[in-house]
Image (cartoon, rainbow, N blue to C red; front, side, top):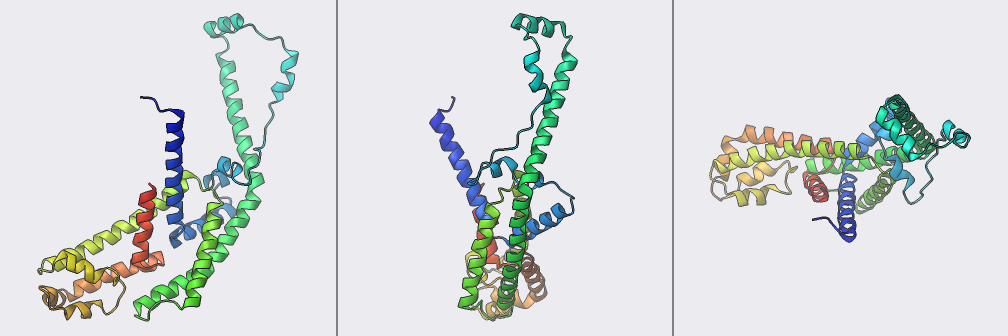
Length: 293
């Protein structure tokens, strides 16, 4: 059954809302800004084209929409000088197949014109995009210092950031999110960012799964493990704390699997360092991106 016009609009709105949710989630991830800075450098070094980073048409159609550069066809200026063929004449030519080469030439001309139009758009948009990328790079450097300190504080059981640092962190995040959204990243780049996020999440789930199954092998209940583990992923005193629990399995688990616990938690902590955020924050980002999909 064909969709009505209203149905098509509703689906389009849901898709766009999902995309917005996904991008908002990606903008919470430091990995996104790291990737964008790499793209900026590659763009500066002419290793990639602007069209490989942003959606040119979407950028033109944005809040500050511009009219895309028009590439005129030389032949069009001379069309009026040539007599028009009747439809019967065109049918005859098509049937005979004598003008097949001409049609191919037209296709080639269309492709050339499309390339020229894209190049013109890139030339016009490049200064604006480069300025935005520079803003993202500079702002992210400031943000990364605070995020690194936040992770280090948690690893050292020194708490979190001060209230003023938290406010500054939020301000920098808001600035970055606004800048990234203004870029209109193309679909391929968004998919690459999502894939990177999911790859790290896969490694996280694997390590956490191993730790959970190891605890369960000593009789620790799943629900109790999750209660004691979640939120304490980076707590350096976690093993000692759970070793004092009186519930079934904990003492044997920590006594017999001390090295395995240390190794698995080290892997999990490495992922936190790689993402520059806590495991709890990383999970929230993954969940938001998944909802957007």
